[in-house]
Amino acid sequence: MVMAAASFMPLASAQSAQSQTPAYRDGSHDFDFNIGTWHTHIKTLQHPLTGDKTWVELNGTVTVRKIWDGKASIEEIEANGADQHLKGLTLYFYNPQSHQWTQTFVDSSDGVIEPSAIGEFKDGRGELINQQPYNGRTILVRNAWSDIQPNSHHFEISFSDDNGKTWEPNFVADLTRAQ
Picture 1 (cartoon, rainbow, N blue to C red):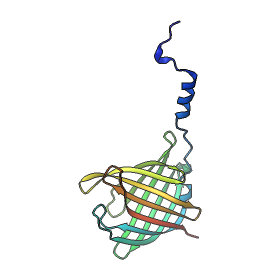
Picture 2: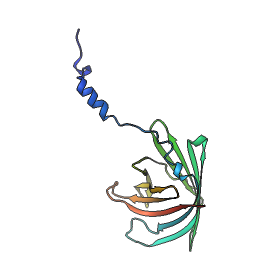
Picture 3: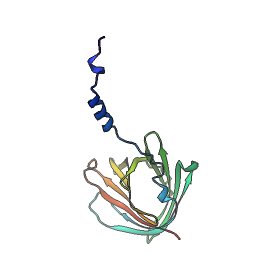
Picture 4: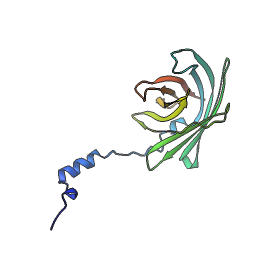
């Protein structure tokens, strides 16, 4: 019997290769914390990636509900500040094959659907990333959820124009559950 060298793998090597295979977890309930109605305090950086540190503050409401038997959710945002009004819609979809989430946002002021961000939750923090055009170039955009508690959480959008080496927060929201 002739065995091809490429198909032979010692038992120890096979076990080692199996232990290096990432263990996927069911993340389909990662966004369950977000379901409900929230009061939000938002800060937006007026001129991201310019060095300007002028922030605008808004207060509003975020309402999130499950759709498609919990395989997705829809989020409606409405917030007001001194000179700014934000009204937006976010869709979240779970992909059971990749064990990742997709987030797609549209702002009512222009009706433009932003490129979808894709990612997952790990160690109590969710990060979804995409690429978007910004001021004539393509940048990375990171959406992150942290400090997740039953009645509060933190959400932040950050930009990177150096391929993720550094990140500048430009949308920061603290949310508390409406009682």
